[in-house]
Image (cartoon, rainbow, N blue to C red; front, side, top):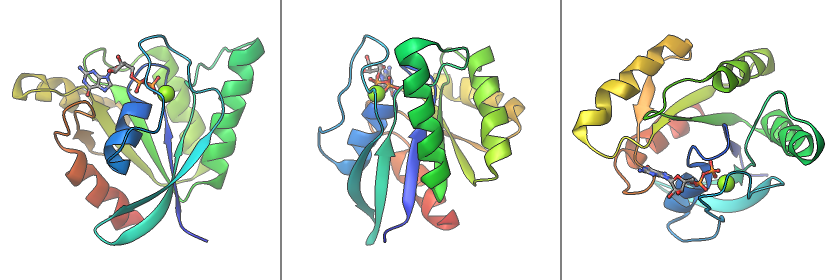
Length: 162
Ligand code: GDP
Ligand code: MG
């Protein structure tokens, strides 16, 4: 079986956009409305000749109830199945309480985490990415999933721990 890379994070941080960027095609559903990806969705991906399974997940709200709870549970399943987790944070917004709660869950999982500081669309936003060192997950990789900026570097970092 191929190694599994799971993409997790709050709703609307750009997980599905990142998945599409990595796949090089538009398959994951991107929406301005949070919470479109309800279940975990697995895709065949490759980078630098290495194949892996890339798993998109729905938004991960910690105090979730109802359907949102089911979505959060699917994200936890994705982490359990993952060899590496890409944890996506919106660098323009900064770390929220929900992000901090996800960090705790990821720590408990013991899985290697690559921190994606997304929505770094230009040089100006790089400082916002650097602020995410505070999450204690090591280096935040500045990425613009929308424009492709930094996506190769973060994938190299993922393959390094695979
Ligand atoms: P998800 O809920 O985490 O899967 O987020 P989506 O991929 O559906 O994206 C949510 C919104 O953020 C959409 O409007 C995207 O176009 C936007 N978005 C995603 N990545 C970026 C980025 O790198 N820069 C900017 N400016 N917007 C982004
Ligand atoms: Mg999504």
